[in-house]
Length: 272
Image (tube, rainbow, N blue to C red; front, side, top):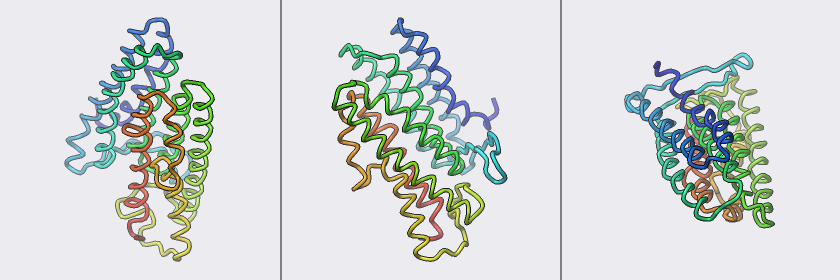
């Protein structure tokens, strides 16, 4: 297997199990087998990228080019592999905990739960391996939509209210992120993450730099739980306990923190 395709396989493996999870609705053992299998295979795939990451080599795969200098790119650099390794490793433990919790509490709609869980995992690894802002935004919003069914899983009044609040915060943040990316592309002609910052030697006025930075910070800061953008997080604890673990430790908040570091280190570094 060529190393180039491993980031793509790492993203797709849990997505590929979603149909099997749905088809195994009446066979809980088989359904949960697919869940664990996806987590273990994904972790192994990410592990194979560690040697190249430790050598400072990035594994890059261009999926398609939407417009000139605007491709969908997966890039497993050192930082991305580190994040993917933590997320995929924790996911295995969270999956086992989810199985015990969901069975022990006789929760309803377990199939929807595990299917959404699998999509969340693919979204998180996609975020880790995004080679540019366009790819990042797609997976970032995919994570938002995939976690919504988990937040409202109980479907009581409190959970529905928490879900609405979650979508209000995260989708608004997505709009800010898209606006920031659009301005960045209009100025630089690229959305590729760069170690020295996307803006490089581009001279920005103080007001423009602050405006763009605040747009980016608003876009990624909601999922990171940065004050005062954090109030959705306590409300989302209306979800089952494993979802709380997912939101805090595995996917959403960590993806937000990952996004903040991408913004500071790979977009604005030369401007700081």
